[in-house]
Image 1 (spheres, rainbow, N blue to C red):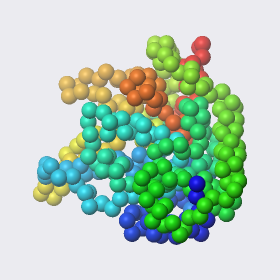
Image 2 (cartoon, protein in one colour; image 1 turned 180 degrees about the vertical axis):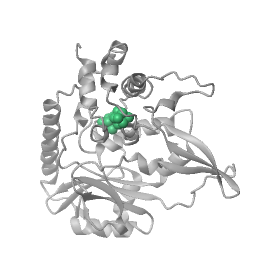
Image 3 (spheres, rainbow, N blue to C red; image 1 turned 60 degrees about the horizontal axis):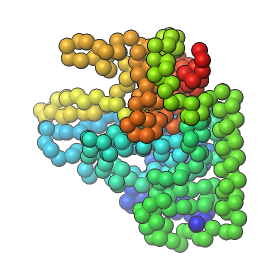
Image 4 (tube, rainbow, N blue to C red; image 1 turned 135 degrees about the vertical axis):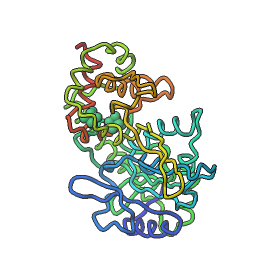
Length: 341
Ligand code: SF4
Ligand code: SF4
């Protein structure tokens, strides 16, 4: 286990700039937004909680050109890889779903795979919880345990650094002068800090009566015809924010447009909450009603993905709670789904 001081972290980020476009979370008001390290003028916040944007935004862009002139070469092949710093455990869990869809299933997405292979992920432990965090209800700890290159755990004067991949180990070796052996007691300090954050999250869970994932099995099937869906959908304005902000949602739309005298094909994030999402060419729509679309969103997350990818497609990040203008709260819906109502 290694230690890196706060001053040396910035030296490491400076060194990474030659191979990567480095992104760091910067605090603005009560939120943290990823900014390019070069342009980050505000308060760089490696600890605290997840950023406003989901991690998926780096791996499948909200809108990108995927073909030009219908040639087989992949556009953007010369794009510099990213190093994303301060990624939290709830976002990493999103990879379980994104990888299943774009990498490990029947379709292999060349853009996503390239991004997964090239990009560097420097994660960090959460050092607090915000009111909407409920990751532990989904069995996720508020600190990364896998899928990172290097993880940073805040401690006095710096961070405990743990390499989690070959890429991470090579990086620590390459910049060995910036790291030192972790002093005695660092591991215990890390364990205590982690335990304190777990307690914060569990306090949220208790206050909001969020059911644990152990109770989710079969809940959608049981409540498929329930009036919960119509009731919860009453205030929904179909903005799609719950999907776009979610680290596990991945649906997209392909469309062609003319760029000067050439054609190009674009891919854009889509939302299953929008009326025309499932409409077919003949005009038929299997989910014409809003409550059917809301039910479909929950069915995908809590019934379909556990069956095909052995994981719930929710990480308890709480983003959809903050983003929903209709104040539809996933924690409350889960409580109703496992309850007797
Ligand atoms: S459904 Fe909501 S709480 Fe769950 S991962 Fe998506 S945005 Fe986060
Ligand atoms: S964010 Fe809220 S209002 Fe917007 S589509 Fe989702 S549930 Fe409906």
